Structure formats: structure tokens, C-alpha cells
Length: 297
Image (cartoon, helix red, strand yellow):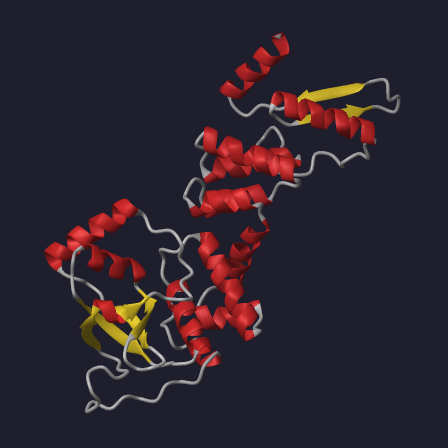
């Protein structure tokens, strides 16, 4: 079950004092108020970087017809004359696109930059619409800024430690693969399958196959297991052989063949290095035909 915002935040910032009903409308409160849109400035700590223009236009049309279903969340600016967005940038942009002059907001206590960072990141991380890379960067920033462990972070954002660890591991991937997650070319599940594979070349090759062949996450995982040499003919996964120590010459030949054929090539030599087996991998009929055409040239 999703943990409510604030229960974990107490570990990072002091709990705000309750607000009295007689306070002015523009003071920090737990209930929604209406403020001019031009008094709200962008969130300095927004983890979300990508906003789909088509979906933004759809939301704008919906707001024009039905109004804003859920208030955005803001904090008071340092001078208490304006507001800084905490969560709801997509809704704010859609309201601006719809031509609205005012918007309903909930004002959160927390005036220091560190408090704003904590509230903003936790508020956004507990939403479901961040992509995995945005979430990973948010987790990392919280851990660094507040010097907390992954175990402590689970209490703050209400996520399982295994989920946080798996998401943070995505930051180990090359930049272009992270970008593929960011722009939606692959999912977090696909990315985890790519993490199973050792080496930059194999990761990039697996990414290419996932995108070109529109592989499901399960197919990507199966392919990754094949790459790792842990699949047998019954489809049950196990180590089928121990990696033999290969000479630099053999590795260089493997690399050259992989580059030429665009697929995994494995060379195994026997005790007599003049004898051995060359295995050329293919993962679809399209791959097979492509390799055959190259070999026929």
C-alpha cells in the first residue's frame, strides 16, 4: 500500500506545526486555496524531465471541460509573496495551456531549500508517472543530500528496499540505454534484462535487438540468459559451462566477427588450439537471414 506523504518525511525534516483556521488564505494550510498561476514558479528539484506534448494537450482539454480534478502542491517562496511548485508540474503546464489565470493549490510547510527538496522529491517519487531513470536520480539525490542509506530511504518514500536497489542499478547502464528508458523506447524490465549481460558490446547488442524486434520483457530476459550461457534445451536455466580462459588473439577474433556479423560469436578451442568450434548466435529468423547473407558474400 502506498505510504502517505509526510510519514516518512519526518525522518528528514521536522514535522510542521498544525495550522490554525483563522490564518489568512495565503498562509501555509492543509486545505486547498486558489492562487494566480503567475505567482507560481517552477520547481528547482523536479525529478521529472520529460513531458509528452500530446498527453499534455489532452489533459489541457480535459481541464478546460471538467476543471482540475486534483490541486497541485506548492510551498511559500522565501519572501512569502509567491509560491514554488512542489508537485503537479504537468497539471500546472496543462492549466497554462488551457489559458487559466488561477489554479487550486495545497500549500506545504517547509521554507528552507533542504525542506523543499525533501518534500518535492518524496512527493514526486511516490507518484506513479515518473520513469525509472527519473526515480533513480531522485533516490540518489535524497541519499546524497540527507546522507541516508537505502534502508532509511525505504521509510522515507514507502518503497521496498529491493525495488529501490533495482531502480538505482539502472544508473550503471550506459547513457544511451538510460536515454532509451527515459524516452520510453524500453521499459525498466527490459533494462534489468540488459543489466544481466556483461560488457558494453553485449549490452548494446541486446538493446538493439529489444528495440528492433519489439521484444517483450520475458523474451529480453530469455535472450540475456542465452548471452550469459545459462539456458538449456528444456528452457530451465543453469550454468552450462564454465568460461574458459581465452587468449588475447581469440578474443580479438571474436570481437572482429561480432562486429562484422552484428551478433554474438563464441570461439571455443580444444586442448589442441588448432581445433575448436565457432558458434554464431541468432535470435530471430531475420537475424538468421541477415547472417546467412553476410556469410554468402
